[in-house]
Length: 450
Image (cartoon, rainbow, N blue to C red; front, side, top):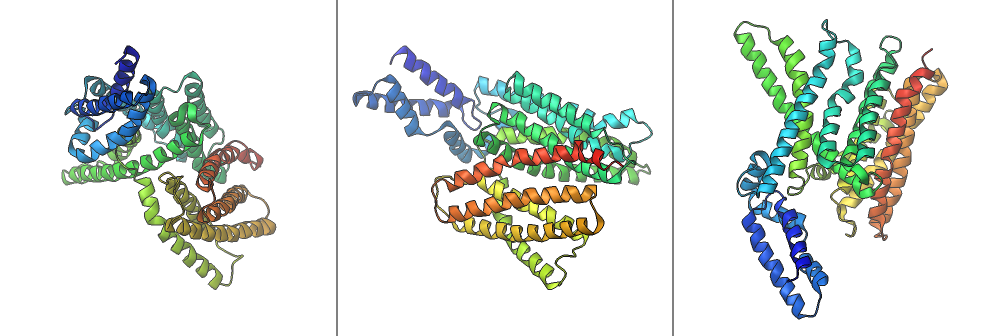
């Protein structure tokens, strides 16, 4: 075989060795198969480049190969992910160790950032801590992703400066002057901070649908790991508190002022590292959960609509019920989005697509009811910060749900390209949510300051 072809094989082998779950012996075996295919293709009259490409295609993608080996060797995989051991090539082992040490370093930074307000205010922090929670928790996560993906100067600078700007926006409106401004800012600042984390993850692919969908997948997996780490951390803090209480000491200050902030900041980075470490070889959990909960939420929407209609007061829902409606509407959009992350765009309509259409239809009806109630409240009591925020959110959700329902109808009718259009529409709405969150944080509190 020629020198250029050997270089291509060496590059293919190096990429495969870097995949978790694949040992050097496995790569040797695969290389033998690859060379056998190439020899056969040479005999059929193909040149070097053609034979290499066809042979690689016959073996399958590197990610598929890594996933298959991981399924057969799950115990070895987890040793590699956590310890960097058991048959990993020196290059892969060095990369894994570097990633582990980097994750630990950023986790320490994340914990210190969460503890920073307590150092700056020894007497204790007030409710303003909630304003900075997003940047404090997510800055180290974004830094770790920028280190790992190295998207270039432009993206790195944008994400870094953006996080600083978000923290600065959070500090503009002090608590006490306007309680509504405090609540709305505290709820929307993390949205802006997380969009910057998604930018750090997507890198130069932030304009592409596939890049945004990868960021969405990362988001779902990160949330799941954060929940699991949070449950474990909660148990650990409880054990510490109980042990100290049994010894006659009060550990509440230590738990709340040290363990909680340091643990939360560190867990945020560890969750990101776990997602990155296993993404190539283990199926995502978020789409699985979406498939479980989509039918349940479709039923919940139907029951909620029945309750609202049966009350005879469709236009007089309480503020708390409106809040619940908005929360479950956001969950419905999330379920559709995460179901798309695991869908084959080339596949035909399935029963689950019909369930999604039922979910979106119920959400659309509920959103219409919520919009009517908000408009009536504005007509009766005038414009307030909370009403404008809810009105804008419901309007965005209405637009999203209308187009999503239409695309799901097309998808269920097997219209060509409907799945890809639905995916592109959902990812295209992410900047719109970010823009509205920016308006809520930077503009509306000033408008309603008086």
